[in-house]
Image (cartoon, rainbow, N blue to C red; front, top):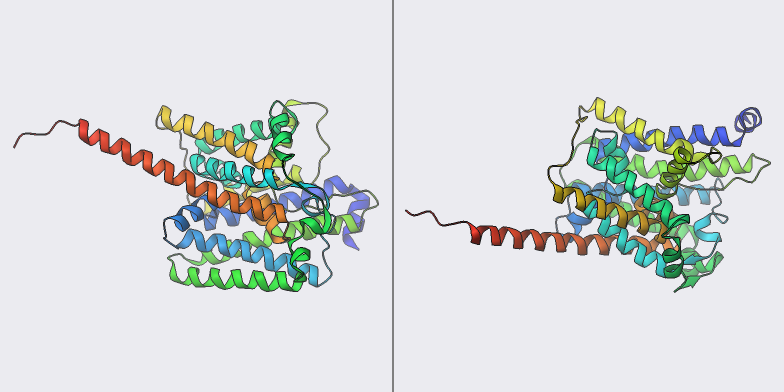
Length: 365
């Protein structure tokens, strides 16, 4: 088999890194062209406007679920040893982390993956937010914020195995999961046909979801053809962001693997998409208020992602596609936290505009 030969020649780490670059570039290009963004979908949902952004997210999520469950039914994938299912998890961490992440992504105008995509498009606000996100994620993983994360996570623990597997808990099995994904696909089709958007909405939304399934399949295939222990994983951006931060700051650097290739792959794919679509534009901050809003939001996202066990893609789509209980709890938290913060910011903006209007002297006729 070609994959086994590549592993024997180049080693598991190199093969995984190359796969990360390829799948990451696919994700970045399609996410950029389709404007895939959980934040935008959340805002549309809570404002009662079921438009293109919600349709794209639903296309991505349903494609990921159907793709992953199809691979499992065909015997091409086994996620039983995946971290989201096999190890102990925290329901308290998933819920609170999801809430914090959702609030933070509204303040930074994008989740972790969206910040990386926008950074490649010349958005300096997203670049700064992404760096702060990575620093906070590393601090929560093994730095100054790790005691707080561990304390919150200990409030409600769930054991690994069937206790974290929604398909096992409900008894519907993987075929039931596949059908559930089909229901989401029907919803995506319904809202997609009603909303404005061209070909990239469909191709990009479905392609982003399938890239999540591709990551699961590729890491599993490498693990099956390797004599070394290889971790099965999907797409996520909190852990890789923290890893790249340590790679820059600490020596010796962590060994290379899928995450090593993922981040530059997404950046490259998004840059190509921006250049093709003529979307590349250098943008910065307009005022001090905007800057501290982005900084606070990035901190909330960084800590929330490590507490929840993943970001909007890592927990919300990747973990959701394998029906990990904690991933679904985190995803619900993200939608609730995003809706709450959007409402708070809208209320504050309305109050500011009201008092500005009151303070403006009336002009005599």
